[in-house]
Length: 356
Image (cartoon, rainbow, N blue to C red; front, side):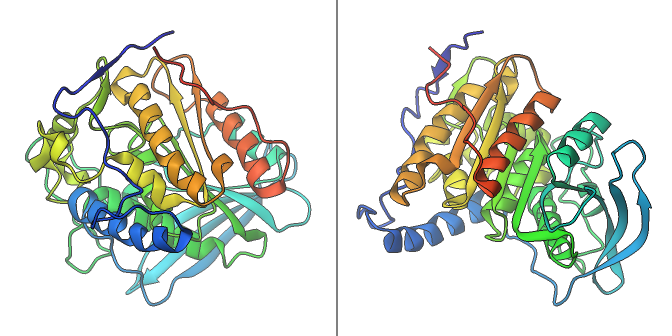
């Protein structure tokens, strides 16, 4: 399938990652680290709002351990993540049979049941821990519409945050908990999510350097997609901020219809993950998710990975079909994770544009 790209006529180019706010070219790792602070602060201030603060202490309490039926002797741990003041949320951890420690795939979409038994079985068969939490335990996903308010949360002592920032905070607290489990290789934690969960996973990876691999599937606007460069039928900044204003900080909606004035686009979010690994998986028929725009942000972010001398750590993969988190998407992630964590052969991913 071929998708034809159309562009917003008022926004024909993307902001340059490798020139700092003063206009100076970024040509060294040390300079990029300073530039990264600019990128981080601009992106959070205008798009996602501030991140909730890390609590003083996080504890992982294992409530129950059982054999996971049908998964070849794997164990299933039911855990509670305590974040202080009596607040917590649940984490399910599938541990492969045999000795550890094991790398981990951490999934935040427990509310949507995207990970089938076939997916969990494939993860365990590769010798990975599969861990899953329900991000809407952290902050509710309010009813869509222009009047949707920022979600209240029992975790944040009366303060309100955009839902994506709150969900990314949930990923971070799950990482805190996983690092306390003896079966987990704390240096090999990957986060993954689909659609709005993919947006949250990308923000989590961009704001926590303990996450070694970030993967977002069909994440679209405010995820891997591009606000300026849109494929036919793609969700726009105006669409996403009108229907889901509670996902964001208060500053993003003002740029609807004038995306050219944004000081960033989503290649900035991808670049914050560098030099750690990033895989985005896309569907050619998911036009609303702007798969062609994701290609543009991918190629723009590659400049930073090249500067840091890790060009292979950013990858994108396309499949036929529509919006969904399929077993095929998970298998691409497992292949890439095997390369990142175990040094196996790097899988073949998209090196050339699949679009006209």
